[in-house]
Each structure stands twice: as structure tokens, then as C-alpha cells.
Length: 331
Image (tube, rainbow, N blue to C red; front, top):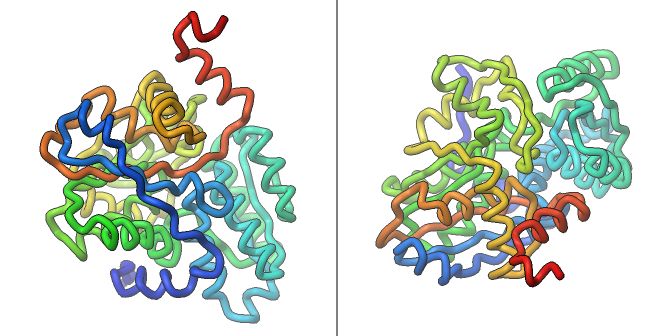
């Protein structure tokens, strides 16, 4: 019987990964709280995290827990970008060979960032599920150690350290808005939050474009969905055909699910720029976009949402921000 990660695992991860991560700030969004009637809204700034994304937490927990023999073999992963970047970074810091399998759907700037960190990149297939098949073949052929993006107790426990930091600073948190794709982030954060305070209301935020986890929850087993272009591209991808951990954990711990549209992502990105002068990728803005568009009633509640990463192409980012500026400001 498989063992699900626990609060103790997250605490152990917290100690293990300290040399590789930054304890990111939590800042108040008082204007957003006023707009929504919330008692308070805070933003957890994983967009300022080492490698530009929360993903370094899980990658560090997994890689730093490997035996010396496993480290000599080298590691391999598949990714939509941010996890691959995290694996490349941690492996590079630890002097370990890394291979990152990406689909041809992954943006070119993400591919170049991963290569710049010293990883070998293998581009194959038109979806994350196809990239995963390539990864399985290369792993078997070359004897590399797998570091999966989300469906691993060590990865999940690493992501859970975010909730440890949030609740240490804001113990009266009522609502957590958490990005949902493969489920490692939500599974880890929700498990930790509910272990500390079972009353925390956990809301999963999925893309309207490709809600693979939601479709899998409905079906009761992993299903593949078509990957469509999205501003929240790091939330694209399936949950893995052999999913063992995140699907049951998301089913257990998520209290509510929201689907986020492309315009709502743009709203969130512009608001975060305008009010906080922070650059975030599309996936990072889904919580703020949901709050701005009144997709959840948070009146009187203390809310925390995660700004999960900052990996975005400069031209695309500027186009989105300029598209939201008043006409007089563009002239």
C-alpha cells in the first residue's frame, strides 16, 4: 500500500531544502480586500523564489534526498518548464547530471532557460503526456533517476513547505487559493494546511483551457485532455496515466474548484503589476483574477493566494500589460 506524504514529511523537507530556497515574503493586498469585502487578502510571493517558481522546493527535496549512488547515475524529468528549470538548477548546484524532457508545445524561452542551467534537453511530442513517454524511454535506456513534476511524496512534501511558511505568519488564514494542474502544489499545501487547521477552505484554480485534474476527478481516473494555448501555460499538461498520489489527495483536500478564463488571467496580471509592481507569469495571476472577478465569496474571510512564478517572455508580458492600459497612457 502506498504511503501518502504527511505533515512530518513537510517539516523534514523544510529543513532539507533551506540551503536551496528563499523563504518568500507574504504581502497584504489591502485594495483587493476592500474590493471583495474580505477581512484581509495576502499574496505569497513565490514569483520571487529561486529559479522564479515554487517548483524548486519539490525538486530540491527530492534530489537532495537521493543516495550517493543515485546521484552518480544522474536525474531525469519531464515538464512544462518551471519544474524542468528547478531540476536543472538543483542538480547543477549539487553537481549532478540532469536530463529534462519537454514537449514541442513548451515555449522556446523556457527551453533556453533550462539549457542555460546546464541540463540536457530532449524535445519530443505535442503534449506533456507525450513528453512523459519520451522520459520513460530515456530513463529506462540510460538508467537515470526519475524526478517527476508532481506525483511523488517527496515533491508533494516539498511544495507543502509553502503552507508551513504561510501559516507561521498568518495562522488565522481562512481560505487558500491554490493553482491546480498536476496537483503536487495543491496536494502538498492543502495537506499541510488542513493538518495544522482542518477548517482552512482550499480552493483549486484550474485553466478553462485544459483542466486535466478536474476531468480526471470527474472520471475517477487519469484522463488526457487536449492542450490549448494559454497565458497560464505552466498549468497545462496531464496528471500522468499512472497517477498514485495527487489525484486522491486533491480529491480529499480540495473543498472547491474554480475554472479561470484567459481574460481573468490578464486581469490578475495587470492588477499585480499596477498595484504591486510585480512581474508574474499567467499561472501566478489566476487567484487574483478569480478574486477581481468575484468568482468566490470571501466576505469577512482572511485569504491567501499564491503568486506561483515569474517565468514569462518579456514581449508577451509587455503586450498583456499594454493591452490593459487606458488609451491615453499608451500614447
